Image 1 (cartoon, rainbow, N blue to C red):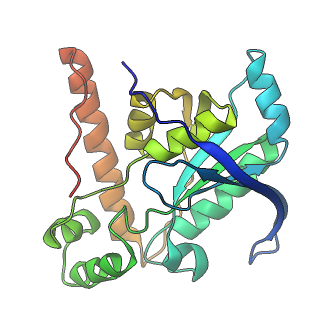
Image 2: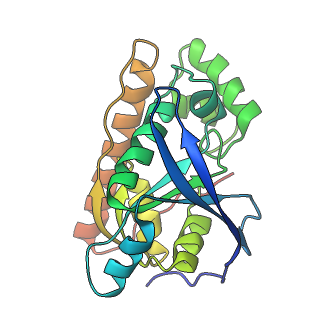
Length: 230
């Protein structure tokens, strides 16, 4: 049974023109919120014909394309090659703008452990740990991200059903548990570079592990177990 969500409201909305380093331009309707459970300043960006996408959804049409994108200062802003976050953000904005939908920009740096801790984890990765092992070595969870605020934002925007732009099965599982109908999971592209090969391999292995666990839970008829975030 889906978890009950506290009610959030739209705080303000403003139109912002966007220009990316490669010259791609578009316009976003940026929404801020009151009442999000974690108190963070998350944003929703309405892209393309997002209003038309909501209208189509309301009459039983196709669900809008939605990407929950966790903040990555090093990748999104400075173009770090140690991850694929910047290219994923760039790709998501264009793909959503082409169909109409929302990008949820979530302030969950370093899979929820924060910027300084993420940089500490980088040092441990340089010593041989993978991205998940490094978080654990710091006394944190492998992935502490929580998508309750994302589900609140979608509910506030009137988006009960989505086509989820993500290769991460945990996002789909969490949003489903929180009452969002994930009609389809649309995979992101792979952005491989010499600097992020090990990082992407670790992410792929973790996604396969999560999907295998969910399949086993489904066969056993039990709800998926959720790790305790620290």
